[in-house]
Structure formats: structure tokens, C-alpha cells
Length: 469
Image (cartoon, rainbow, N blue to C red; front, side, top):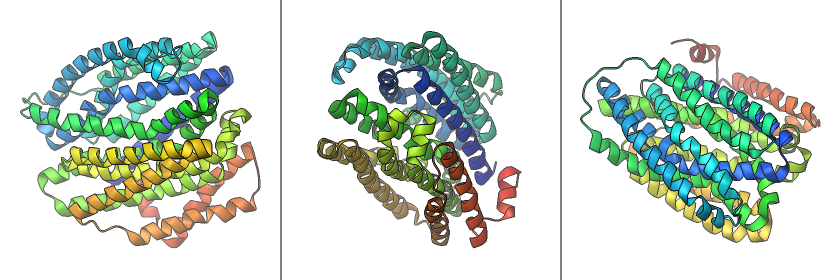
């Protein structure tokens, strides 16, 4: 499948999953009290960090190796499933036993029960993500998107039923393992038979997996550490409104992670076959596509932060609006870090990606410890923007030094201008609430119109995204 079309399919898939996810959170905030919802956000952030071993370890290696060696893809998947089983069992046992110690780190022993319930998901989620990664390695992006949508829909339906029945965090946490089982079952049903050739690079794959896990562990820290610092300095009330702001700020990252997901197998295949010119063209396309999608979303979220929080959640969470207006730009920078480190990983340099993201985290820790006591939640948001700005610049320099890429400068400026036009347009329509959310949707129409006027997009490109080239 063409890179642009594959990216479009994954963006649509992730977009649908995000919509389902925010509908789920919309319901949770109305079924749970603010402290209970804060507990759910905190426990989920802890669970997601441990699940990196399963979600972004072997699945990430499968994406790269099965794409580079399609003749051995079936053997690669079978090997990965066996190793994933061992990792899941060991990780579940460790996290279950260590739950009391984890709770003490956050100064709340009541978290132990919730953490032990949450980690049941560890037993199942890794298999679902292995199957998603396998479809990605074959560039079957439409099937990958379908699997993601099935998982998101299952979590929404199961979660809503359990939460409405229990009226507690317990029901929300049980939704995770049940939806993972459903998603994995659908993935195995969709799985097509693969060549039976023996995989001859098992040790190399494991060596690639280890630094990849370290990289994603640290990346997940960047996504969650600010919330943990807020809990430490500001308590559960701070977690409530900062967590909602963080949840909305991550929209650009999760919505357009499909750009990096489509990029890895395409680049791995191109680098393995020595098609250097094709690799350069693909990198340039990925950079343009990411900014084309990110720019309007980041601007609109920043402008409509209060409406998004009060409409999608509750007015009680409105103190998070100023945080969201700042934090969304940090997560936008994180999307570029993810893009550039994906390029490094496709070139078989995950250790370099880990070193880069590690120093970004060190800077973020220093800034959070310095700014939160002085500026409260706003300090955490500023700390993330500054540290991620450093990481984005450093990762770009590494990629440019290796590949000497030709960035689409003219496209970058046309996209930026079209997105900035949204600011004065939003001031001409001073509406709030649901009308304000509608105005954000109209902003996307205005943005698209300006892209068309400036010649950045045309009907041929739009047609190519939807139909095969």
C-alpha cells in the first residue's frame, strides 16, 4: 500500500479509537466522583508504563523485522508469541506483588487494590498488540486500523456496562482485560497463514527489542511523569483537572501516531533494499503529513481549551483549561520526537533513540521539580513544553546528520500560515459550550480551504488518499 494512503487509513483508525475513548471518559466523569476519576487516571498511567514491555517491546521489533524479511514473517510472529507469553506471566507476577510498594511511592496505600486489579490486563494486552504490529509489518494498514477500532469499541461497550452497573472504578478497570481478550480474538481470526520459513535472526531481534523497550519506557515517562509530579505536589484534586487537560492534550499525539506507524515498515523495507532516494522522499512526506495534520488540531485545542473541558467533562475540571492551552504544544513537539526516533529505529539505531529521550526526561524532571512548587500546574505544563522542545530539536539534528533530508520548507510555511489564520477567525465567533465545539469543527473547514487556496493540497492528492494510486 502507498505510504500516504496507509497513513490516511491509520489516522482514520486512530481517530475513531480516540473518539470512542473520549466518549468513554465523558461517561466516566458523569458516573464517577472527581476523586474516583482521578484514581482511575492515576492507576491507568501506572499500568500503561508497565505495559510498555508488552505493547512496544516485541511488537515494535516485529514491525521492523517482518517488514524487512517478509519471507520469514510467519516464523517471526510465532517466535514473538512464545516470548511474549513468558514476559506477560513474569511481568504480571512482579507488578501484582509490588503493588503495595508502588502505592507507597504515591503516598496512598489505598491504590494497592486498584493496581492489582488493573495489572490483570498485562496477561492479555501484549498478544493484541503483537497482532496489530504484524498487520503493520505487512503494510496491511486497513486491517491494522480495523483491529484498533474493534478494540476501542469493545472497551467502550464493556466499560460502560460495567461502570453503570458498579458505579465504581472497579468496573472501569475490568474493562481493560476484557476488551484486550476480545481484540486479540478478532486478531487471531483475521490472521492469514504465512510462509513457514525458519527465522534466522532471533538474537538480533532480541537485541533490537531491549533498547526499544528502554526507549518506550522513557517515552511513556514523558507522557505521564508530569501527572505523577502533580500528584506529589498538589494531591488528588490537582490530578483531577491536570489529568483531564493532559488527556485532551494527547489528542494530537495519539491521533497522528499513525504517521510514524506507517513510516516504520516502509523505511525498514527501503533501507534494507538500499533504496536511499525513496527513503529520503518518504521521510520528507512523513514530515509534511505530520505537520499538515498536527498544526490545525494543536491550534484549535489551544484556542478552545475551556469549551473542550467543560463540554466533554465537567465544569469542575475547568481549572485545567490554561494548562491544556500550553500542554498541547508540548505533546505536539513529542509527536515530532516520535517521528524522528522512528526514522532512527528503522535504521536499526534504537540505542541512540533511547539516549536522546533519556536526556529529555532528565531535563523534564529538573524543570518539574523547579517549576511546580512555584507555578503549580502551569509549571508542569511549561516544563513539558521546554524539555520536549529540546528533544525535538536534538532528534531532528540527528536525523538530518544521517540522511541529509530535504525538508519541505514551502509546505511548512503554507501549512503554518493556514493554521494561524484560525486564531483571528476564532475571535470573530465568540461562542461557548457546545456551540464553541462546533466552531472548532468549522475551523477545520477554514483551514482546509486555505490549504486549497495556497495550493498545498489538490483534488488529486485527496483522491489518492482515499483510493489506490
